[in-house]
Image (cartoon, rainbow, N blue to C red):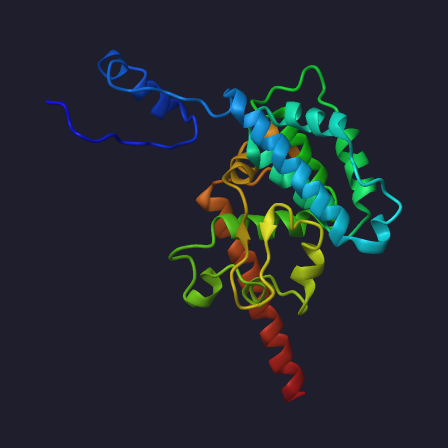
Length: 258
């Protein structure tokens, strides 16, 4: 029976999905298109890069006034397209990183261009991984960064008696991890290219790209920035901070009574 309509199924190339649609019974009724391998994706990424670089140059005003109008040049655009390997997530993350007001865009672009992939580096997305590592290295407190990232990735459920701590807002994280007000913003100031940090401290911080989550959960790719999926490790982390909060409350109560 031929149905008078077609289905469009979009997904990342997960092995189980690829295996199912690669079976003989599907081959006659399914047409597969890998956007990462499609020629048009490179053209689209190049167009996107040109437009965004122009926007960065305009928005940074006086600090980019000395930069030629054609910055960064077609050669650099094509190099970034090549590194992207058809993945828009690489292009968007690069541009977010370069366009951050923390530094000069020209200097940040140089940092990106100087990232080289070691010959023995084993990863399906080597350039993207090294970009993520570069972004994370901006944080001065790695241990705190990893603890907060673990909470962002696995905030609950059913871990806390007080459900407000299952949120991922700046206010919640500062309360849970016993941080001074404003600490989350200073800690994550250089991570806007991978995290969406709302202006409102009561709104949840979210991860911009699923690929960043995959990167953090893969120890071979993220290395010292690896975040464990283990529920036991998560419980241990939460228990530590809750005990710390209880201890502080007891000390505060004793101080008031003395």
